[in-house]
Image (tube, rainbow, N blue to C red):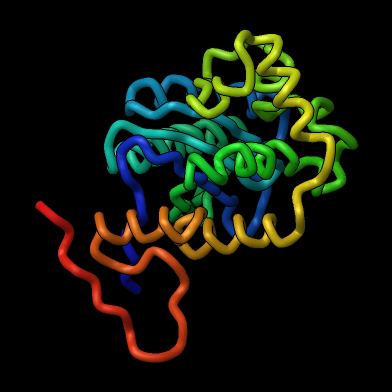
Length: 233
């Protein structure tokens, strides 16, 4: 089966999900989470990726990253995934694959959906019933983004920087975004875009991405297929 090329553009945030094979566990002890985050920090820096948000769930990982090149996210995920699998197999005396295979992803309209996607990621443990508040979960970026907890991994997106004139005001404004749950329709929209390798954003953003890549970036509709003009050179 030939997989469609992932939609990835330099400087455009990308929401990534990497799941365990057959939804099996990927993390078995607290040290596993720490090891993964240490290597995520290392490989993100090496590959030219900036991580804005993350959550490590028991059997999957969410990341929100911006990259300097179209190949950087793939480079990051390949290097990180391989090293972590070797660690797990060695530590737990197992063999075989750990990950589902290809990670799933979608470009994020940074003007309209970036902060919503960050909330979606950091609210995962709450939706899963693991904690009552995202601050109670230690393996996400919430404490860094909302409470100023030191993190060598998190690099704030420019939109986050507009939330306030200083760190304290930005953190207060960010915490206020979590005063209510995400709308179910928005949660579904984020899931569909990420699982389907479509853009997450307004129609204008989708058309801009399609003009660059020369193919559809949103779910197709019944009827005759659209024709795309060649992107300008």
